[in-house]
Every structure is written in structure tokens, then in C-alpha cells.
Length: 111
Image (tube, rainbow, N blue to C red; front, top):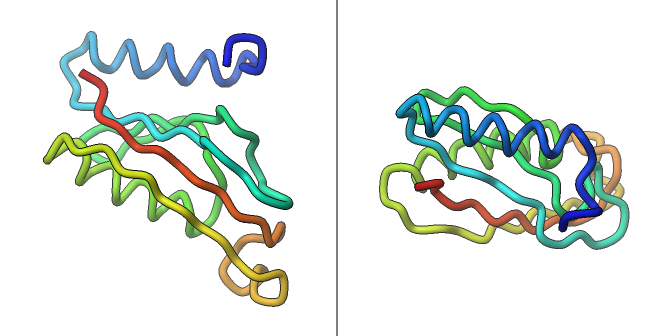
């Protein structure tokens, strides 16, 4: 992912490293695949701590809320998860996604 990461993405990884250094339990969510129009590209990150604090972005709206919820479970049980989200174009606006695309997000605990 090296060259594909912009400064914002590098900052999210730095935040994850800092939170771990401070002794916080942390999960990292990464966009690993997109289909069609998606709000964030492959390689985008969201870092979440045990208290539900988060930085970065993997999508927006209801998707990020669901990712944060899954990340809290990943922090507790240590089992990574692959999450897939997709919304048909005609229903996209109703659930807060204007793009109508699909994304896959890998969530893992940072040890």
C-alpha cells in the first residue's frame, strides 16, 4: 500500500501506534476491496479504541457505525472479521450512502 497512502492515512496509522503505546486496546479497520462507486478507496483506515473513540474513515454514515461496533467485538475476542457492505442505488440515500457502491472492510486487533 506504500505509495497509495496519502498523508491522512499515514496519520491514522500513527494514531493507532500512539494509542497502543499509551496502553489502549485498539482495532484497525481497512478497506480491502471496493465495487462500483465507494466513498473511500482501498487502503483507507479507521482506528478504534475500546471506549469507542475513532479516527480516520472507511466509508461514512451507517457503515462506519457498524464497523466501530464490530471493532469493539474484535478488541474483546481478538478474532479478525471481513465485513461487506453494499447498497443498491435506489436505496442509497435512505441509509446515508450516496454512492450506491459496495465495500469490504477487514477489522483486526492491533497487538
